Length: 95
Image 1 (cartoon, one colour):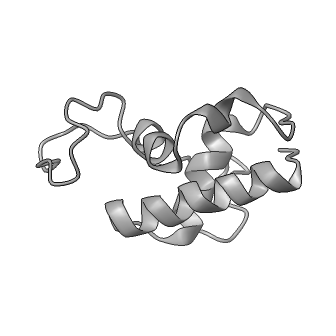
Image 2 (cartoon, helix red, strand yellow):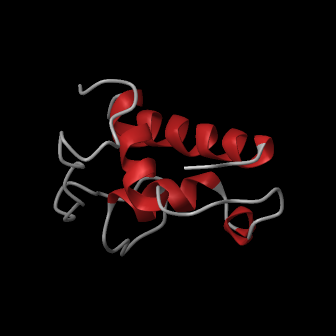
């Protein structure tokens, strides 16, 4: 995935949010971002920056987000499966 510096910083914030909010590893967060957007080329002022990193962290991890409150009980929400090991998305190793 090609990304301008500001977009790369944005992806880093999304990954950080996934690690802190969802308790997954940084490598898995990066793999999920790569799986979600790996086909796209981004530019400095891309439309994805119109939403906060937390929004994208949740949308990438969960197919549906029924409650956006920080203290929502997410224990029974369905989540997207991890990218396959052979997908090429695991650029930081599989954890």
